[in-house]
Structures are given as C-alpha cells and as structure tokens.
Length: 338
Image (cartoon, rainbow, N blue to C red; front, side, top):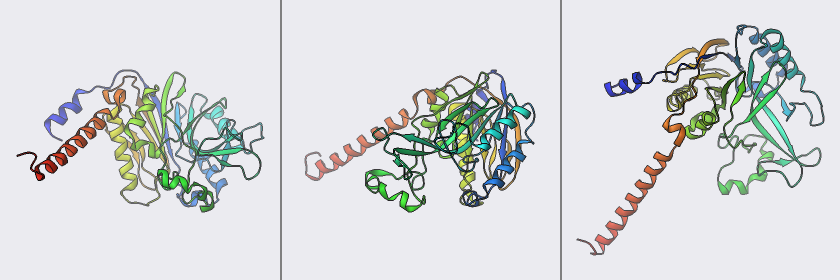
C-alpha cells in the first residue's frame, strides 16, 4: 500500500452510531448434496447451530438457500392454500422466542409467488397443477420471534443458472423448465431492500448481488446501516472462486462505508469493517458460529449517492475518442486532412 493510499485509509473514521451484535452461521452443507434430499438433516443441523448463538445476538445470519424446500408467499406456507407457515418456520420462530427473543433471523430460502392469469411478469411460469402462474424466487427472509417476516428477492441473478440472458435466449425461454433447472429463469427482484429490526436497518444482499456496486448501494440508499451478505458459493470446491467473492465484499464495504457480516454455506464467512479490514472468519468447510459487534453507519458516500455515473461517463468519452480517431484516420486516408 503506497503512502497516498495509506492516507486515504487512515483519514476515514467510523461514525459513532453504535453497534449491532451479529452472529453468522456456517452450516457447511455440500452444495450439491444440499438439493438432493437430506432436508430433515439440514433442518436439524441449523437448529443445532442456533444453540451456539450467544443470547445477546440482535441479528443471526444463515446462508443463501439455507432453508430446504420451497414455500409460498406471503405466509411461507407449504401449499398456496395453507393458513399457517411451514413447520420449520414455526420451529425457527419458537427457537427465537425461547433463546433469542430480541433477534432477527436473516436466512436464505426458496419462495413462490402466485399470479392470476394476465397479471404475471415475464419470469413467471404456468402452474402445472392448477390455474394461474407463479414465480420461484431466491429469497432472503427476515424472521423475528413474533413470527413476522420481511422478504427480499434476489435481483442480480447468476447468468445461465438463474437467468437466461439476451433477447436471443428469451426466445428460447419455453425450454427452461424442460431442462430441469440446469439453466433457467427464476423470479427477479427489482431493487435492494432494508430489513428493519428494533431501530436498526440491515441490507440482506444475496451472493451475486455483491458483485454489482451500484445495485449493492441500493440497499444502503434504502437505509441499511450495515450489510448482511448471505451466500452459497462453494460450487467450485476449494478454488479461488469463493475467496474472490469474499474479496469483492471488501470492495463493497469500502465503496459504501458499511461494515459487512457475511454468512456462506461452506465458507468463507466472517466480518469486514467499513475500511475493508477483515475480522473473524470461518474458512473452507468449517462448521460453526461467529459473533461480533458490527459498527453502524447512516452516512452516504459519493459513490453511494451517484453510483456508476463516473464510470459510465468515462465509457462514453472513450467511445467518442475511438469514433473520432476512426473518423480522423478515414479522412486522412482520403487525403481530406494533412
């Protein structure tokens, strides 16, 4: 780090807005086994890990898609016609009431939303078991001890797995379901969200959303005082992939001056300060719980306010320069300029 960079690093000070006690849980469930049964074992694994969370935790983070099975919105029911949340959601709420009544649990889950015919968005598919349409969302759920929920739908989808890109692939959209989920189009959120709990707001970013600085800033613009990233990014094994995503989280922390608590299924989970410093971490294929006091911040950086405008303006200027150069060379070739 050069002297100038050190000056920038040291010159910023964390505002004194208090802290939130946050616990991150790393279940360490193999990414491929996770979707091939063993749902009951996954449930028991989560409940067991929650017993390791300290009593004073205000926020508890579970990773992306931590809750097995699919549930219907808005009540997180097992079928669209049920009146009560699924049994596991009730068990989670009971666990919070008995052991962590002051905490908000933030966890990943798959949720479905029903639409009447004619009201469905582009991503919805026909209901094979009845009328209407539905979306399948990769969702962050905020659950408190009273059973109240807050939802955020993943808005930046993994290309080729969660999203079929470009107009050409949109034409082939009807093939998605027939491919059994190898590639596909799930429902897409439109913006960031801030979960509020007892006067503190957190931004529940899901995995791939952390790669997009401006989109990530939408959580902050909506009031997030710290960021909660939940991820399931161990698909490539113990390779640089998951480490790269953790490193990018450091960049997001610096851009928006928000401390980050990160819960990943198989690692790397941990804490990052608003200056990008790495705190406690759980490495690859470690199972456990980490807890830290995460500093809060409500101030907005220049980048948070204006996003990628500087980069976009630079791109336009570069394009103009290239076009000017091409025009100049063409005129010179035709002897129109000396």
